[in-house]
Length: 229
Image 1 (cartoon, helix red, strand yellow):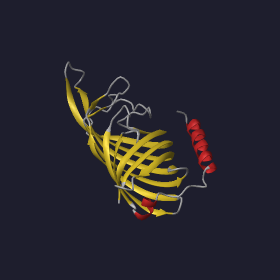
Image 2 (spheres, rainbow, N blue to C red):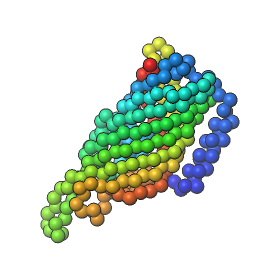
Image 3 (cartoon, helix red, strand yellow):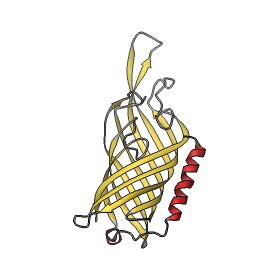
Image 4 (cartoon, rainbow, N blue to C red):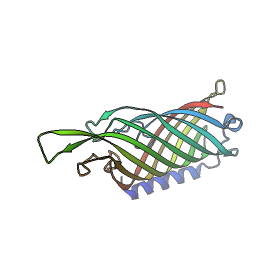
């Protein structure tokens, strides 16, 4: 997706939300209970849980820092609790043994109609991925494995629309959101012996996974389930 298209979509989302910004009231539970713990499928693309390149389960904690009758300002910190080993696939070039990391979200929400919201989201993600590389000793007939790490940092700004609901009987929390934003990705490898071997490109960012930096789109479909207390 070209940068100009991302900007156009962002402007349209902003215009839509401004039209409905005479917002509804925040759920009463979020006013009296400011803490949320949650579980969410996630991936290297951000919140896009079906990301073709990698997939993990994130657990996190959210705290409402400030709120009014129709707006919320909150901070969330998520940790990768589970990541699967992947070998690439039909559309993915990324193999990974394991991924660990965390992310931090700062979000300002405006409640629109019947629990629907618009938000502006600032996002930072740091991950360490263990990968298998290949070593070609003077182009001999055999190849040996090389396990190495890839450190990856993502900085993102993203408008989002979504729906949040808290069951007042048991305080279970559901949040489904969709957003399109811009992210800056920077990555580098540690202990990779043959750095000239192509390490594969990220499907959505079209960036080499092991190295370099790039400005790219971020598409998010987040599904959070948690508990409000």
